[in-house]
Image (cartoon, rainbow, N blue to C red; front, side, top):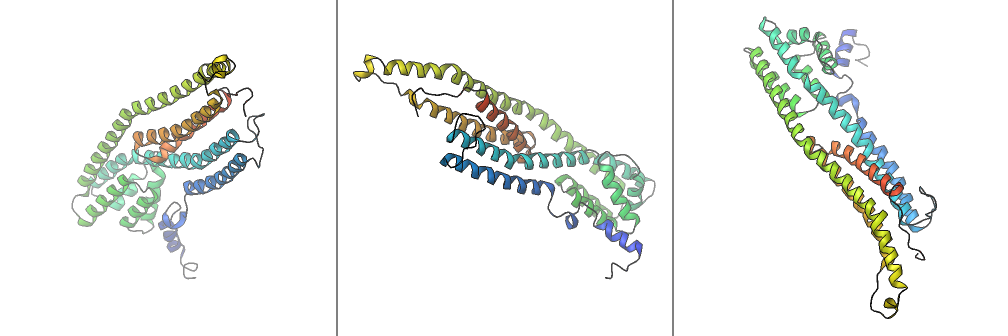
Amino acid sequence: MATAHAPASVRKVKSLSTAPGTKESKGLGREIWALIGGGIVAAVLWGIAGLEFAGTLNLELRPGEGTGTNPAIDFFVLGLLCFIAPYGFTMTAKLRRIAKIEERLPDFLRDVAEAGRFGMTLPDAIVVASTGRYGLLTDEIKKMASQIEWGVPVATALRLFEERVPTPLVQRVVSIVTRANEAGGNVADVLTMVAHDTRETQLAAQARQISMLTYVTVIYIAFFVFLVTIYIMAAVFLPQMITAGQGVASSSLSSSGGVSLQFQFVPVLFIAFMVAVIVHAVGDGVMAGVLYNGRIAEGLQHATIMLAVGWLMMRFVVPILVVPGGS
């Protein structure tokens, strides 16, 4: 009630100090909602996969197969894609947005330092520097400047900025700037050193990503080579194996018990290939993301791409192996 009847300036300060995007107002992030929604859809598809495997349902993504292992694997893979794809892409988009915000942070710190060298206090320097253009960082700087203009202490404004962009780099910068301002002295020199150190950290991270890009490329090449190898085996080698097994089974060698070839188990080998593709897609994708930037969310994005391509190729490009007269 007190807030409702407070002056407009007081209400403005309170609204700015809990601006959209802070921990007090945002609740669950979009990536968490994507994970929850994807998990619900995945659970439904996995339930359908279990019913397909048990023979209760007869939903076919590839006509003419009927119930059994292949349709069950189809719905299992679709459920896995629904589980990892929304969270992976949403979280990756958030992390890339934060990275773009951090990219212009050294420029902002240098501008604040230059304003401080003209005798301005840290709050005044932040307000003056907020008129510049810093890409995606501009909106966050304008929020911080507006908070300062409406009476929010500079330490609180910096803390709220840290909550909106909760990364180790921003947390370290805010901590150093806040302590330097509280200690007094020449804050401009501290800001210059922090800007230089931040830029060096970003350059080191970019150099690491460039060097790791080679390994990510190798992972993709190895995965697609694996798919091509499976296609060649399913299209050339395994059909010949079935033909040879039928020939041996109808010959006198098989009737005398001298030679036998268990070619009827070849379709089971195809299922093993499908399982191997699923495991490789998820494992290699997560590894690629961790190698590139040290984050599993980026790996889930790679895993989604590999799993979708691998499943589509195995189910709609690689020929199905059928043993004549087999079950």
